[in-house]
Length: 517
Image (tube, rainbow, N blue to C red):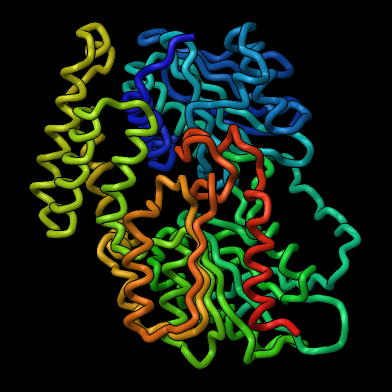
């Protein structure tokens, strides 16, 4: 099974993820599953065949196929079986468990997982949602040019119009935990947030901590649908509560049980939500308001730093996991360099990718949208010029295709979150934080580079006069604090869904030395 060069494959993956969130033309016809599990729109010019188990949609020119099914079974098992039965019988479970990339895709019917594979000359996108003991799966297959010209739009149309008719699963009965579990409703002004507060047993006052996830739409467990079994906030909450610390975690605004709009929220808006959570926790029964702190991962570190700087009398301590100390405009340049290098790109390819990213960032910061658009046109045009003539021909209207890709790029840079995060400098907050601070970096982190961020993080806290700063570099840890080999993002799913051994104990020991009896 041939695979494209990582940089080329990543380009196709980004295209799929971007378009999966875009608007589409409303279909005229629908297919209602005879077993009552789903209803889907039928894209124009796609033919329909169906068995009691699988709906198949086919497009003739260019050739593309899409299957929609909802068997009983867990997501990973259903995806593996569908790849073997509907794509290639030689694809085994190990292949299914190692997609080129897996990402969450928020849709009206829920947050799906999109897994991208390459099978010969074809791209295969497996987009799935587990619901009520079933897994609803949309499986699309076509060459990359056919995806760009036809299959992407049709897949989006199906996903955005798909109605999942299966019932939501009943809440699982809580396991017998050695602490109290309280469902929290947090007043955040114009919306409320749903969360979980876990409190150690006993009668005395205990310290508390609010834990905050990184970028992207996250629920209270920090679940990544693309990484089955990954729930870092739940792991932290359980470990800390067993050690004697009350822990509050919550669904981000617009996610799970929380109100509000996530898409339009900036880091500053999310910091307001953390402030509301902090005050809820400080007022909870048995929580000592004088011993309440914050823990944030990645962008969450930036957010909790902002709150700690603004509310020095309310934040007793701060823990930063893989926290950037520089504006994202600088972080992303190093990200591109580190990820490209870890993916096996040549030095010339790395230099080219870095230069391109830097130019995009510079034009976005200057809000020179005309120049950014021109750069995007040039970049997309160059990519198309590198394709064989036969593949370009399959794209149809080249000008329309270029315009579509360019607009998606401009829209991304103009989004409220990225516009804000691009230039926000965390050091301005760090220079005002005097509370005890624990800073944790992964030795192999390619997303928040250790060498780039450690020194400015320490220097900013020193300027604050903070005399209780502990910096820990976790050996062999990636950005998610998994035990890694290279640290690259394409490795995340293949690793054990757990923190590096001893990682959570290091956090507990640090807290215990300051805030536990």
